[in-house]
Amino acid sequence: MWDWEIQEPKEQEEWHSKISHEDQKEFSFPEAAPEPQPVLFPEPAAEQSIPPFGAGLHGGQETSAPVFPEDWLTKLRRFLSVPTNFYATVAVGLGVLCGIAIATFSWHASNPNGPYDLGSVTSAAVGLRGHLFTKWEGKLQYRLTFEPVRPELLSGFSAAVLNSQRPLSIGIALTDAQGFALCSKQILVRYDTRNATAKDPDTEGLALDPQVRNSEAELADAQESVREQGQDAFQNQIGSDGKVASISAQGELPCSASAYENAVSWNFSPDFPSVAEQNELLHQLAEKSMRNAANSPAAIEERRRAAARLAANPPPKFYIEGEDAIVDYDAGAGIISTRGGKTFTIDKGGAEAASLKGHDFPLHVHYRCDQFGSCTLFTAGVGTQHTRLRK
Image (cartoon, rainbow, N blue to C red; front, side, top):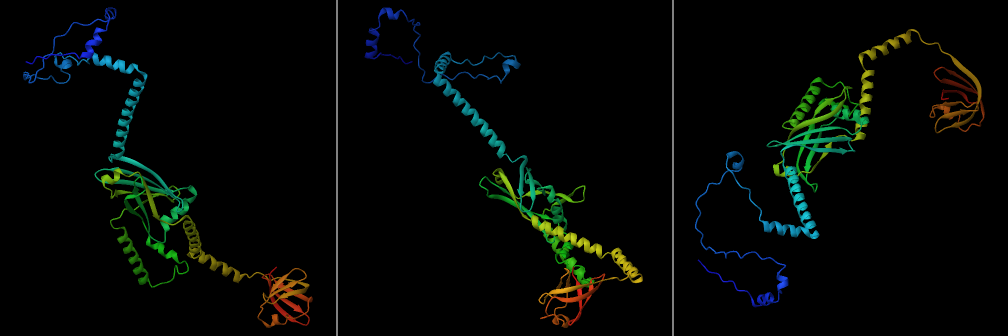
């Protein structure tokens, strides 16, 4: 064992000598405790079994709770009694709690497991609004829906999906906080190859060789099958009015887990008709519908019957006659104007028109016209003029 001797410094001795007896009465000193004996190499204690957690409650063994040292409690109370220390401690505690909350939120946000709503993205140029959901299940799954941004665009949207004259597709991409694409995918809109004939309405319906027509149709179908092979394609959602209300698709996105953890948004690049092109397509479809109605067997039969009735019972002709005066002749346009406000057109390249050139006006004229506007003008010195009444 070691004996330790504690010597007080000289200054401390002098300080003690200055304390008066009256001052000493105000202090109470505890009895001197025995001097601690240092142990350099303590004897190993006998092995003790540590009771399991909660043994004092459930195992029948009594365990004492650890007691916080009284001197530490005293120091803590003194430290917190100072307002600056108290507020600083509270601020540090709140900072620690905020840090834990932020870390917990970041962990949940970066965890790719579970469904996640990436929200809606709109393109005014094509009139589309897309909504994307994702879910990580070993691979990144997606569910995507597109619809018109406004109800009045529904007809054009439906026409573009069902009657597009070319193959369509929409590309989507997940992006990070800086807007860089992390992964992308192209999704196809199903294409009916028969719509390609609407590109040139003037040649539509020509009596081509049936073998040529069938060969072209088979080639177009084969090309579309190759385009759709291994690709995700939208499914049409038909509304109660028979129009396509929306299109939807689901499948896998080629994203790794690390890339998906960095994704904060998404966007799409549509190979889709613009709003103006959708309106033009609606106009073409309306004209095509009228042509089909006019060329239908029922319409053709109705026109034949009307012509037969007209030939059997031609309407009686009637004429209007009167006196007037020619006051002007426009040789360039072939138009004759009268004082009574009537206008006649004449073949400006014929001999009758040439006889009017250089003539002095006004020129008295007698006119006679039938119910179809075919007129004859009788003039003295100029002769007969065959014209048509404009008004």
